[in-house]
Image (cartoon, rainbow, N blue to C red; front, side, top):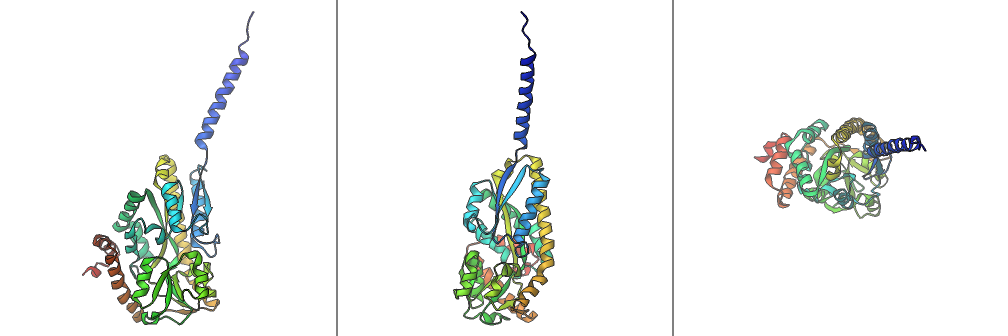
Length: 345
């Protein structure tokens, strides 16, 4: 009796093909990564959201769908320190502010020295090419297992707002209460004669509305995003600090990708950051005009008044850095990168 082997061979071949397909499917399976950040998912008001949505598109395109980003705006995954802790311990991405990064790398406050940059180009060169910032990146990775992936612009330089009186000179701060994002801003307000209280972004509007604070400091984009023009009358364009946040990611996650995927991801980050910079700079004057249309009085301090802000703010801030225990070498590196070594004399 002859036993046919055609069926078993066919079944075996089919099984082999199925197994191969399953393996291929596993290799190509998409990885979904959470990306959290502050502010509403509104492209007209939130520059960080514009960056995040563009990054999502570019990452998914450049990795051929191997990495998918799930966006969590509006601090949906927690406030700053909560989200940074998640980034340290789980495979995720986060756009953090100084309040999120500074508990891990206090030396990041050096990059917020008042009037460190004259314009956007100076700031971008500082973060893209400077030795100080490379040291910050290495320190964050060493201490926390987190990669610093990009410096993300929030939409311009910081401006002061308040609902008590026009501020044109540091003397105008006397007796006012300001919302602070972090301890560095408290020190700055105090140098001008005001007081500062750290308040989370999600509570800023109500704090200003109820009088817990008289004013705050943010770029025009965030003033619009938070509808702060509804509870603030005066906008002072002192351009005292560059407004930025930081795209960070879990180091172990990034190191676990193969070289091709990692390179594609970093290419997407660089392109999204470039696009965000172009977009932000083009929108600054339009945002200021919008705030003026909403009834805010826009104050542009004179060169003499700006010099007064600088002459008071810079020494006080440098003293605060020293009192905080930040090593002088960090300050030296940053000032040298910014072309301001004369402050070391």
